[in-house]
Image 1 (cartoon, helix red, strand yellow):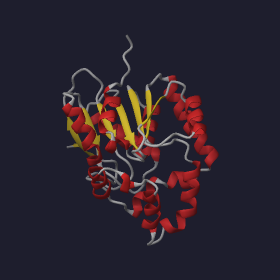
Image 2: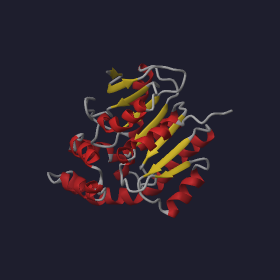
Image 3: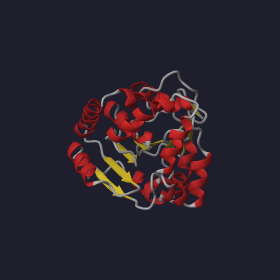
Length: 262
C-alpha cells in the first residue's frame, strides 16, 4: 500500500472511530508495529490502523533532506491521501517527535508518544560531539553507542529479532534526521518544543507519554508543566521498546484514545 509518497500497511475499516496512525523510530520500519497490531487483532478490534514507513525508511523513498517541518508535510500528504480525518497519531522514538510536531499543526484526536523525551539538550550535545564521526566512515560507531544504551540483550527474543533485523542504519538517515538537533541551540530547541506543546494543550488534544524506564523527576515536572493534561505511563523493564515488550498495554493505550467526552 502507498499513500502520498509513503509505503504503509492499512488494516481494519472506517468504523466511526478516529483511525490510528503508527510511526516507527529512526532506522527502523513499519514492521516494528507487528506485535501491537497482533494484540489489536486479538482484542477483536477492526478499527482502521495505518502503519507508515517514514521517509527514507523501509519501502518509502529516500529524500535529499529530512527537516522536521518537511517531514510533517510529507506525513500530512500521506494521511490525507489515506482519507484519515483527525487520526490518533502514535510514534516510537523519533516517531514520537514527528507525532508531536504533527499534532501541533494538524487536527488529531490524540497523541501517543512511546519513549521519546521531548527535551533533547543532552542528546543534542552528544550528537554535536559525534558529528565528525557521523560524517566519517565510522558513523556506525555512534549508532552502536546508542544501541548499547538501549539494553537490547535484555529484551525478549522476539523483540530482539525485530530490533536487529527490521532496521537499516544508514549515514544519510543520521545526518538528515538529526541535522536540526545538531545545528539548533538547545535553548531554541526548548522554546520550539514549548510552543509545540502549548499548541497541543490549547487544542485540548489528549497526549499519552509511555516510558520504558523510570522517568526522571525533573523531566516529569517539566512535561507536566508544559502539557498539564498529559497522561504518563511507565512500562518498566522494556528499555527503549515498550511497544515490543508490552504490546498489549500499548494497544490498550491506543484503543483508549480519543478520551470520551460524555
